[in-house]
Amino acid sequence: MTSHTKVLSSGTSVEVAPFSSVDLPAIFTIEQAASVHPWSLKNFEDSLASQHLCLGVKLAGEWVAVVVVQHKVVDAEVLIIAVHPKAQRRGIAKALLEVVIDKYLVAAERLFLEVRASNDPAIALYEELGFNCMGERKNYYPSAKGREDALIYGLELQL
Image (cartoon, rainbow, N blue to C red; front, top):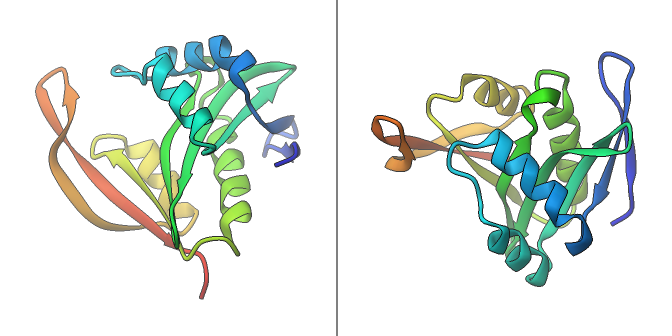
């Protein structure tokens, strides 16, 4: 996949591009900053080795966001999406997901993802992009208070 330039609502341009093993230190830093329970470096290495779609967003030449998508036979699943806290609330996650949706419009029937039930900003974004809540996984995520439910969202791609 080649790079894409996306213009955010602020007028700022960002580059959505594949990342490689050379970029993993910066990608891993994003995940550590954005998540209470981050993926391990090995998770990213395994995703690259498995040829999952591994994209990041560059703002002013610096990686600030990441998404990893696994494509199965007819479905695709967002395994992780993270935006560095210093770059959040700018439309970067939306731009990243729009590229993912465009990529899979003809390659998959559905796109799935999971989100913490408490992550209201992410839920609002997913619903804005047309995702629908399809179910939940009770006590799925570790949290400061024990466990937290995951909501499963899906987007029909081929109508």
